[in-house]
Length: 339
Image 1 (cartoon, rainbow, N blue to C red):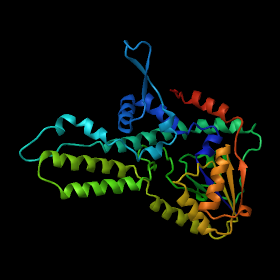
Image 2: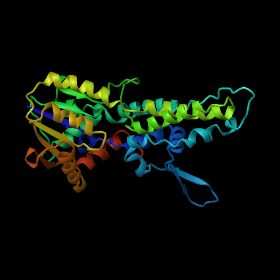
Image 3: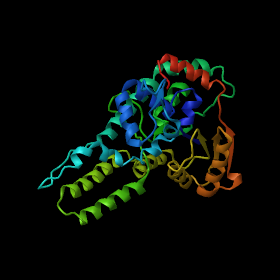
Image 4: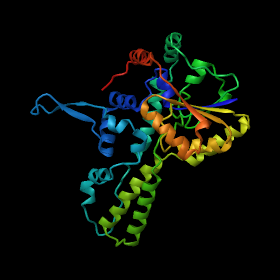
């Protein structure tokens, strides 16, 4: 019996335009003002000048440096954004300190809602899967699964069900499943707990120094707004691991092989992989790679983080020569604009 751990590279392998670059494109097309707002908040390049400087014309861009590690950057918000937004009110002084409305934390809610819409409106569509199935008939060395396999997926889509006919009960969605509803609970976010602790400590220090002036109150409120924002976009890894553990108990002790497909193997993935390693300590691991850099990362992770011996794991290439062709077909099908 095998456990297959599925990352975003699995959907990309099948041609789904599921990289965060396309989420940026979606935001520009559907809510350009909001795209500018988060661009200012995170201080990334959201537009560039075109033509003569005198004309002041610009066009939107999706900056790779930010969107390539989108979720990591969610924990690195530019705190000066809140100060700049309320510059006029924050310069006012009152005999008795008053509350200044700071609701920039709602941007986090809007961002999560936009993410849900992106997944359900452009990725998890029946016509996309029909196109993939049509193309994958021509794929060389297409992926195959056994009927008694189990799946732990970090994706939100139904690639496993639609392409491979995997029953729902054999799949656990770590970060939520796209059910096609506007209020779907899809988890995105950062794991920058250190930054949260820093802000909590800063607030505590400011409260001890509070002198009942407007400027003193404003400073506390600014940090408090930033804290609310970061907490709303924080991934609760411990909670997700508890749900994974319930799924693992249902599987039992029969896992002999663990296959890892299309995972970046970043810091955010390590707690889950360690959890799997602890649950099935004698299982043999197989890691997919796409690039030479992937190979280096796999070796470091396997031997340093998972304490696997060289004979306890191997690596296999995971690439699809027609993935770009499929992706182009889906881009045309869903009328996706690229920037």
